[in-house]
Image (cartoon, rainbow, N blue to C red; front, side, top):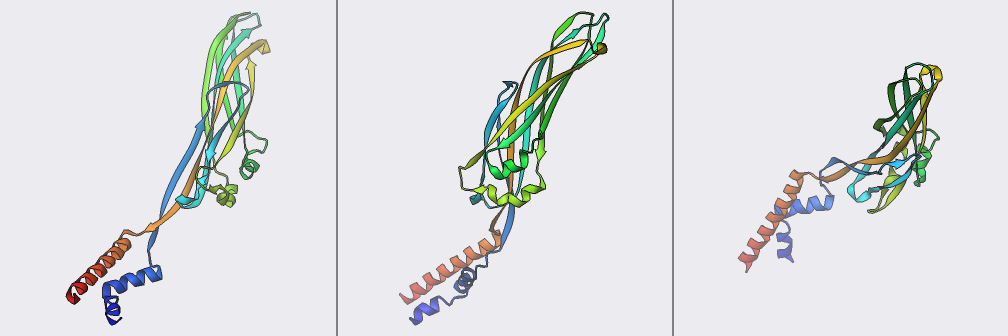
Length: 236
């Protein structure tokens, strides 16, 4: 028994024992970010689309922030007809408003407020002769909006789940076409398509042992092992 006590009383082993027993593992918070996204193909308006986004994997660390990006596109072919008796400059503007929702109730309560999160707008202008129609005027726009309301700060924890869990984001559009020129004697028609997209970014802290502390622990362990080996050889 005395021999066993003397072996465990070496300075290196004492240091290792103290560190392990007291839990003195100096750590640093390493900030990280991870994103998930989806993007749908163009579809004839009105658009009804959806996609999935992953929850934050709690095994990665402590969640400190959440932000979204909602996106979409509008591709429009516009025909303009001048119904007046003179050549006129005609303008038509196609507008598509995108409304987002989610099957994840805490999130849906924030984004499903009845207002669009994104508005797409494209215009064409053409000089058109009297009683003529000009078609094939294409207008294209893609946009995104970053969305990180302060209200999310109170529900970060609900986004933290196990691996492989996800929620849905749905989108619908409401589109229209507005024309002007020729004293209102203008007719405009369109054929349009659009798409919806979304992404989520999680910001988190992941605490890991400081390299210096980890090296100290490993050195102490190695020194203790070497001391035990030397003593064992001498006593053998």
